[in-house]
Length: 94
Image (cartoon, rainbow, N blue to C red):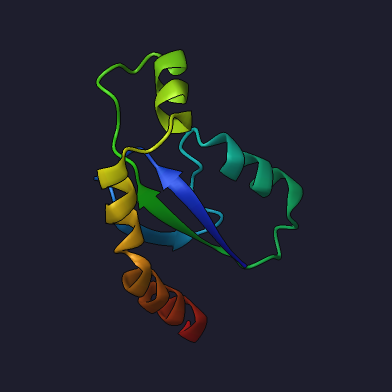
């Protein structure tokens, strides 16, 4: 299983692969998956960088993550398709 997740600690559009059982680092969606999967399940996470707002206040971070993307941000993510496919191939190969 592979999960795509937003990643605050990566530059916008950067990709990072890690095993699913690695620390969720405060990501509630990942925490939920970890709580509901059997520990025997092998899975991977691909973090997609969204950057981080200047404020570290939880409400500001939540609003940042849930806000609409700007057109330029959408273009950047759209251009990452081929790179993402290559990452998925590497994960599938082990």
